[in-house]
Length: 75
Image 1 (cartoon, rainbow, N blue to C red):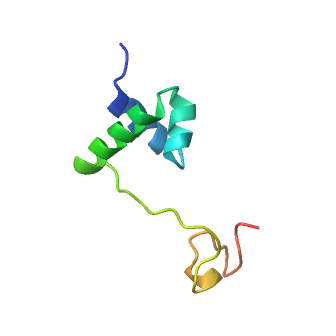
Image 2 (cartoon, rainbow, N blue to C red):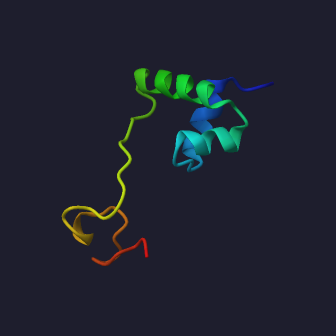
């Protein structure tokens, strides 16, 4: 049985894909298919869309989800 794009994209996200490009690379699906599937998954309430931020959190390491014991966890 072959999984459809919604199941495939959801599986890649559950396995830790961090971006739509990453989902596309992991699954072999075209990026436009991944975008459409992810949009549908958001509408269905199966996943949440999260904005991508670059650099350190404005509140320093204490506000960063990567922080480990109050210190930078990304370095």
